[in-house]
Amino acid sequence: MTDLTLKQALEAYQTVYMPSRNLAPRTRREYLNDLHDLVSFLEKSGPKRISQIERRHLEGYQAELDRRAYAGPTRRRRTVSVRSLFKFLTRDGYINNNIAQGLIPPRSEQKQPRVLSEREYKDLLRACAHQTRDAAIIELLLQTGIRLSELSRLTLRDIELPARLKRAPESVGVLHVRAGKGRRDRYIALNYKACRALKAYLKIRPDIEDDRVFVSKFRKPLGPRASQNIVKKYLDEAGIEGASVHTLRHTFATHHVAKGTSLRTVQEALGHADLKTTSVYVSLAREVMNKELQEHAL
Image (cartoon, rainbow, N blue to C red; front, side, top):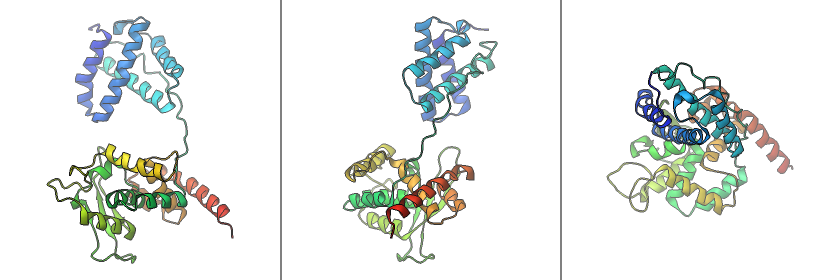
């Protein structure tokens, strides 16, 4: 059994365990950042080699995260990162006992999803109405509930628009959503509002070699961060506080449930594997209905 230094242990985890698990690039970055912070904490508090680390050291790190006032989800992820490291060290024989196995992550803080009211999402659409591309981005997010990453992956081949834009059920478009790692592709109906916005944008879209749908003024595909900034810009212009790109996904689901769209249809559109994940929007829809019936009393 090799008694590695903390940094050697982290290097082995990065070069052996991460590739073997085929972790997503973002997950790798987050785990490594978490574990570099752990190593820095442990080196300052005493242990320099993995054989010297005791359970109390890891619990001391958890207490340190609490002292830093990190949010619950961040502390939970860091605990998962630590457990992942020690699971690898035990599995590959660097240590005999997995001292991190019993570490308990802090409870999740149940945060109510932010949902735009009808007035707010109409204000948002008015704010971007003068910019054809940006209006298409926001309309598409609102009318389909797709994720930011899915929006950025859309290609021209993924959009099928009807020959004539009408409100009739048989005159809908189709959006092919290419899912990311671990998810399955899906097809979402494009209603006339989404089709109208996309048709207007595609008429002025620059003719470039790359077939990604949304393009910057520099004739390059828009990445997730650029699209996120676009949405934030119009949320600010509309005076909408506490909202983000993901708020549009919550807004899509909540208002559809409130208006009678079946939960199964909303589940399919959102790409949720489990209907239980979608069911959170039932209570949110009830709150929206109560609020609007109160505000719009006859």
